[in-house]
Length: 224
Image (tube, rainbow, N blue to C red; front, top):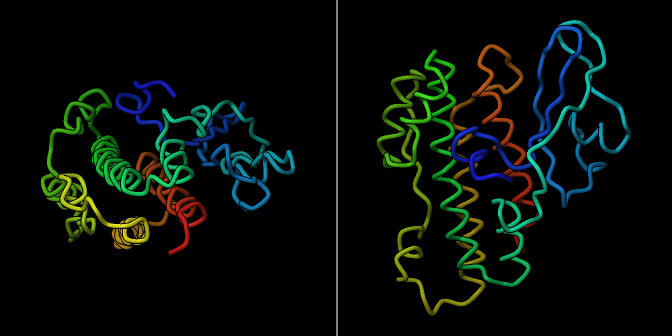
């Protein structure tokens, strides 16, 4: 996973691209390398488990798999780094990485909304560059999306990041990891966005990724 894909190209972990050779339609789906594709009833899961490519929604021709973002088991990816920390029982660090990843995805959501609103991708990157606070991002999104969004607050995030949670046991941090994930899921659900719509392509990518990412977290986070 190249750094520029995260911070410039706005690629997402496990993103799989399918392209129609006839009408150049592109569809994105998500599958991480540590997953069993037969467990996922999605385009990517069906393709990798049954070698059945998706059908183009525009011309009904079979599409081709044209690439993906790269190995998601390595520590250079969000999924790989969190999985490594969990496997080594570094649960406090996993909380920090998860909260950082959530803040990055807030920037990706802002970028997606700006692009779908008509701003070119380079200028959108300059706005969604990680320098705005979560509250500022949400306020901008309220204007662009015309929705009454709440600011997302992750339980114990600030205390953990600033070292005020040292001394708590692993059960405490596992519970905080689950609480953070639950809050992110509630916040994503509050948009009531249907990823099946095709008139907002970048927002679709973001919501499809987040839906899959949260399901991945459910499967890989240790039990409380």
